[in-house]
Length: 94
Image (tube, rainbow, N blue to C red):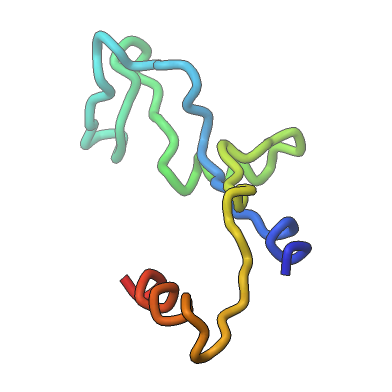
């Protein structure tokens, strides 16, 4: 069980978000462009799907975050009728 836990993780893939881009002026919607445009340059911004496609195409892309189980879990078996079984099952069912 400990080996399964150690090998289990979840990756969160997200377009780059480490540097704020639009602080003073937010992107504007343009009916003519059919999407959001950069307020300074007028360039059409990628859609969410387009940004994820660019992320998929980048061979150096890394996940924004990786979630793993911590070392704090304590794997213990439960034996029916044992003194702590009812308390442990009650805690797990909360």
